[in-house]
Image (spheres, rainbow, N blue to C red):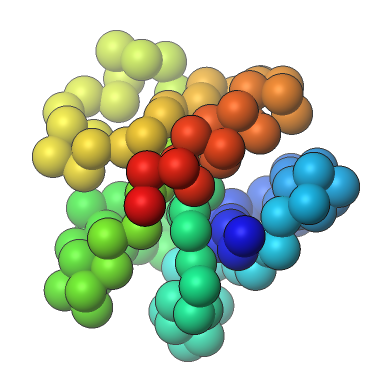
Length: 119
């Protein structure tokens, strides 16, 4: 199963990619939204793991682009923000999960497993 991963922290991106691949997922990892958008949504994508706090585009704009492009891929948001700091922007995006950093690999793998079953 293919998982898309977008995070601007290189060490976290490597660690999450490694954990997902070790668990048997195929991972397409991107360090920025621009990089992701240049490549487009790879065929067979089952889940998107997305950092909420990406510097190059707002979360709403990014998700709107995916929706406009016809993507209905389940999304897991990862964030360093406290739950009260997230506000309302996630409510209409219906994430499968919101993982607050730091989170365990087990939490990530459980969320990805749920997201892959949503489709």
